[in-house]
Image 1 (cartoon, rainbow, N blue to C red):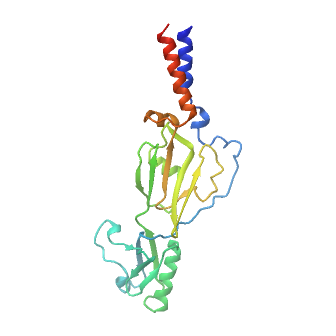
Image 2 (image 1 turned 90 degrees about the vertical axis):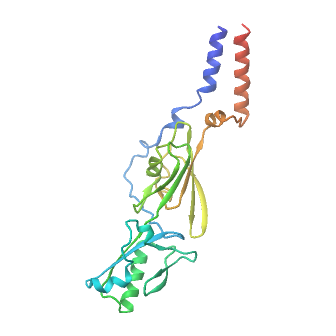
Amino acid sequence: MKKIIFLLLITTIFSCTTKKDILYFQDIEKNNKNEKITINTSKIQFNDILYIKVTAFDNDATVPFNIPYQSLDTKLTGYLVDYNGNISFPVLGEIRVEGKTNSEVETIIKDLLVKEKLLKDPKISVRVVNKKITVLGEVSRPGTYEFSEENITLLQAIGRAGDISIEGIRKNILIIREENGIRTNTTIDITKTDWFNSPYYYIKQNDVIYVTPNERKIKSAGFITGIRETLGLITGSLALILFLTK
């Protein structure tokens, strides 16, 4: 009988994880409806590297406005956004780009080239070529990941890091974001779907995602974090004494 009590106590202590702690989107059936997707367009930030391509009917006339092809790595031949939020563009000089979208910068450069009568009906293409996000904490492959898409979702970012481990808290995903000189942070509960239309459904370049470890993971590192863990330790010890002194 004492052995059975001992085993039950040990099972209680170490079986704290439930489906509610692990399953994603637990309310998706209740909220299963067609919703229009709102895409948050990324804004250019300090330290971004822009690849800018200028084309026109007269290709020879575009040569001064295109960086000569030197490397397969466009990050080495792009325009670095400086501390003041500017790039130095050939002939046109300093252009303010921070806080603007790619399409807005395309329009600015096109209008300047036309206004200065440098090109007729030019086509401009702007891309950020060093987009990256960092995923830390309880994921299979923590690290910094680059992406070339215009937008990726929080789920895609977590997927690139190999998904959340069984010891990660899905109800407390921390996202740290720096934008326009302001740092913000928020927490997302991915066991629910109410964040699908939030500004954090789509990840932005330079975001940091941190998955908090659960109590079991913290305890395995040798830390006792609260009354629950202390009581669990005491109960386990008493059960062990009871078993050994039979």
